[in-house]
Length: 365
Ligand code: SF4
Image (tube, rainbow, N blue to C red; front, side):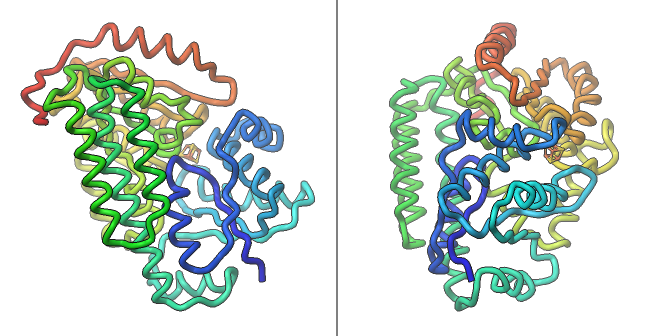
């Protein structure tokens, strides 16, 4: 039974997964940070029209297998978009390339935790449930801590020294990764949130942009070419609902009832423009963009998605109506392996230059 496990990168998901896997006593072979080589490897071995997350995660797997990984953990799913096929197609490609591995595809535990655990044990071997529970709770707490500190960072970056903000964030991530006790996670997050709040001394930027789109592209800096950071460096505060704990809740923890309630809430928001679940985060893109524009809290909205992403193409087709009805500019950016950083920077600068400031008294501190 192989114990050398790996997984794809998605922002800071590695910190969360490492907590769970280490608690189970597994040897983790983390893929090297996503680089140009990762993307080149993934793109060279993927179907041309596969979406960018497919190519990058395939590159992560190839690099981790080079380092000796034997078991790949990948999320599964179902619905109208291609994500549900990722694991199967990637397994076929890696097998055709002669790679020797096994793959564990994790689906949300809709039929109860016991079945979920049984599936994990089949491939990873036996482990006490209490250790899984401990690692899981620690991982979830870390995801929430990351969300909290990133929210503070996104408020602080536009009005403080970005280098200092980066240093604080990196120090937080390093310490968080090393924490082994649940009780210490919240304390660390509060401490770093306070550092960031102190840096901005109650000030907020009057330029605020709501970011919506496909979740991998929003969370993974190598896929969005550091879009969130670039906006912050341009003096823009980013407002977003798509965060790491959102993805974990959606893919790995929510039960069917909670999922249905969440979806009907999104459908209620998006209803005047989109009446159906279209897969991925297309419904969220419309619902969130609408909510941000209606609240008056943002100067504009940016939608970011991989080229050929079907759910986001549907959302893109109705977002101009939202923009027109609420008088807020909405910019859509598609990314793929050809996207150049300088071109993205120019588009962001041009968009930000045209934005009117918002009433900062609405936002609190
Ligand atoms: S949501 Fe878009 S990018 Fe993600 S798998 Fe589906 S089609 Fe691809």
